[in-house]
Amino acid sequence: MSGALNPATFHPQTNVQPGTTLQTMNPQQAQRLAMINSDPSAYVDFNVPWNLTFNYSFSYNNNIINTSTTNTVMLSGDVNLTSKWKVQYSTTYDFRALRLSGVPQFTIYRNLHCWDLNFQWVPFGYYKSYNVTLKVNNAILQDLKLSKRSDYTNNQNFNE
Image 1: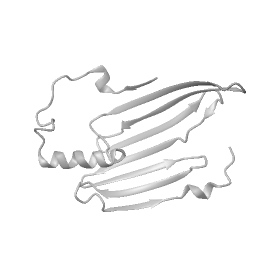
Image 2 (image 1 turned 90 degrees about the vertical axis):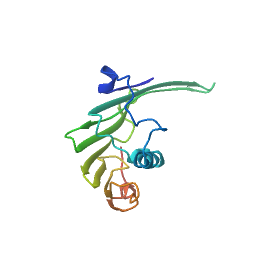
Image 3 (image 1 turned 180 degrees about the horizontal axis):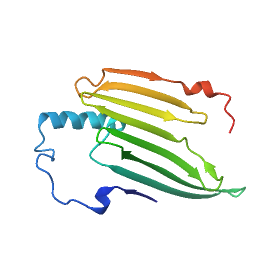
Image 4 (image 1 turned 60 degrees about the vertical axis):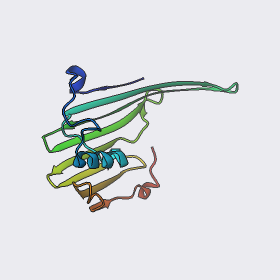
């Protein structure tokens, strides 16, 4: 079971804005859409002030020798702190084990007009790491970027 909440959930818009269909798209919009389709995770929509997504999963397996069940909920979402700052988060909780089962992750985005800055952070666990990226906010120059990251493989001795 899954769902999402955001302002559009409470105030749906039925009219289509001019220039938003594939037939009426200008070349810049088509280029931006191609960039989004090539890497959807790189797209950040500052027009949506907040978003909450949840997924609930229950499974039951019976294979004659033993049975097993899982019961988890995944929460993710984002919130605009200002018109140029956005924070995203993601985590999974296991109700059977009574602990976080996924790796909590936070990402902070900053729109710097012609540049985008993002900071991804996994605060604890085996995959504890960070990644800072500064990149050009232009589809033609999308490969022009500067990155600094830590490597999670340094956490080999992590014990839960």
